[in-house]
Length: 548
Image (cartoon, rainbow, N blue to C red):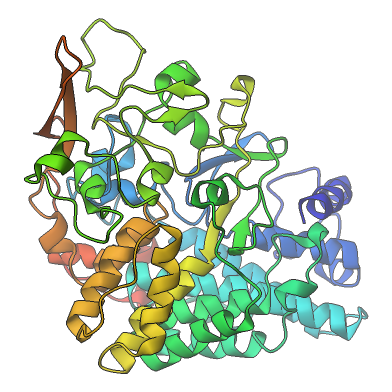
C-alpha cells in the first residue's frame, strides 16, 4: 500500500500545492469534487487521506515534515496513564494532565472531537461523490466506499468510548444550512447500532485478507471489519454479537499467532498475526518510538521516556502457570528467570541483551553524576515495538518504520474468550481453547478446568494485561470494566532498585515512584469532557459530560 500511496500522492500534489486545501469544501480553486470522483487515482488519494486519520498508538509521528497526532491525541503511549507505565518526563501529557486528573473542558490532551468529525465529513463526502453520477466502475466504488465506511465506524467507536453520546452524522452536510450543522448528541446505544450495522454490511463487501496484494498492505479486509465489530460490541456489552464476529475471524483461519512475540512487534507490515496496521516508510512518514524508548546508552540520551512499572513485571506468571511471588526465596533470588516469555519480549530487565549489549538497569538518580550510561525511572525499559535492526543514524523523530498493529489475532482471541464467557454465563470449551492458544505462545500451560464465570473473567483480565501491554488496551479496559478507580485512584506505582555487593550478590528492593504526581481517577473520568469551544459552536450538544 505504501508504494501506491506515494505514487498517488505524487500525482495529488501536482494539483494541490496548498497543503491546507480541503477537498470537501466548495468552491475549489483548482479542482472540483466532481472531477476527483471521476478519476480513480484521485479517488484513491482521497481514500488514503481518510486512512490517514486512523490512530497510531505510538502517539506523535512525522508525515511530510510536519508533526501529526492521529487518533490518540497524545505524544505518550496511552498506557502511560495506567498502572503499566510511568514516565520521568514532566513535559508529557500523562504526567501533566492525565495522572493528576486535571483534564478539563478547556484542555484535554486526548481531545479528538474536531479531528474525528473532520474525517467523518470526508467519508460522507466520498460516499456522496461516488454515489452521484460517478462514472467509475461499480466494483471500484463499492470497495472504496466500504473502506471509508470502516474508518468512519472506527472513528464513531472511538468517539463513543471517549465521550459517550455524540452526534451521529451519516450524510454530507451543507455549509450553507446552519441548522443542519447543529446536530444534537445521539444516545450511545444508537451509535453502537450504527457501528454494528455498518461493520456487518461492509464485512460482506470487503475483500478477504488473502486477496489483498502485498502492494495493498494497510488497506482494510473483511476480517478487519469483523474484528473491529467484535471489539466494539464487547465495549457495548453485546456479548453474543461480539463473540459472533470475533469467531468469524478465528474460523476464517487466515491469521495465525506469530510464534516469535518479539519479532511480531518489530515487523514493518504483512505479519500473519496482524489484521489491521498503520504503515510507515521512514522517508515520507515515520515515528519516534525507538528514539523515545530505547535505553539511553543505545540512543545517546533521548530514550527511557516511559518505563514499565513493577506492578506489570510482577503480573507475568512463572512458566509453570503459578503467580510470581516475592516471598518465595527462589523467585526473589532470580526474579526474571523462568517467567512468561512475554516478560523479556516486552520489557528490558537487568541483564537483558538488547542490540547485542547487556543492559544494566540499576536505578540511577538524575544527579548521580553517571550521565547517560543508563537511566531508567523504574528500573526497566520498554522492549516491545523497538526495532533492534534500526541503525543509529535513524534514531530520530522520523526514523522508525515499525507498523502500528491496531488489530491483531491475539486480541481477537481474547475478545472472543471474554464475550463468550459473558454470553454463556461461564466458560465453555471454546473459551478454554482460545485462552490456551494465547498462553501456549508465552510458554504457559492451559488454564485449569472448572473455572466459573467470575474466575474465568479474572484470568482473561490478567491475560489481557500482559498480552496487550503498551498497546493502549489497558487504558480502555480499565474504563469499560469500571475498575479504573480501584486500580488507579490515589495510587503511586513502583519500580525496582538493584544493588550488588562485592561478591556479585544482587539485592532487589521495590520503591515507590513518588517523584511525580499521585494518580487521580474520579468517577467523572470514565468519560472525557467535550471541549468548551465545541459546546459554544453547537448549543444543541447540551450540557457537558457530568463533572466537567
